[in-house]
Image (cartoon, rainbow, N blue to C red; front, side, top):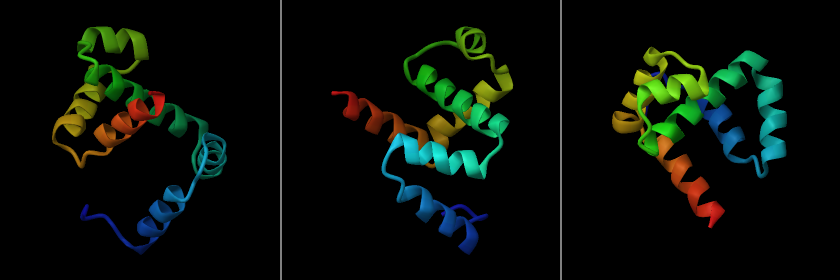
Length: 97
């Protein structure tokens, strides 16, 4: 469990885990985050998707519009992080089948 985890964060994660549709998720994130924060998270997730597909940094930077520093950070999380990106990507792929 991350060192920054506290009761408030646990409560937020519990709320997020109860969301049942993309529409409910958008409503929650729309209330919680700024448009820029949502856009930044979407770019990081797209970066993770493209990295998992084997695309290189130059392609991703051009396609997604993120810096190589962001790509590097996402890559580190994808390969050595908590497994959140991988779990979400795998679940999305299973859902498409």
